Image (cartoon, rainbow, N blue to C red):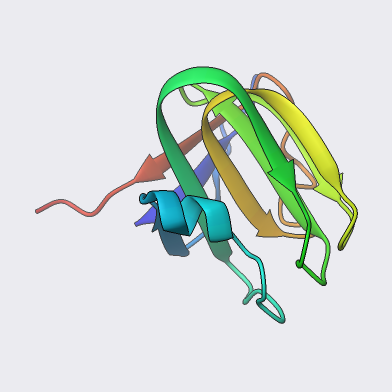
Length: 120
């Protein structure tokens, strides 16, 4: 699986992450990145939700900055750099992606961010 960034008005796609964990249980979504010491390069934690609604991201017990991206139907709604321990942000989303700080530096509202799953 990989996370692909498709900027609006640009034909040049970029792969943001190739190591992806999907938070697909209540426990994994609640835990998120808490208690980890760092994130590897090209890593993403993806939260998949069935419907778009307001979703929160907090940085309690996360000792490093991250880039968080709120997405609805593969379209970026918000990109935010969150500070360690005290960062908090909220936006509507059906998917949230958490990346190492700086990984989403070129991602903007309106861009497309999609997961490509390997063909079976």
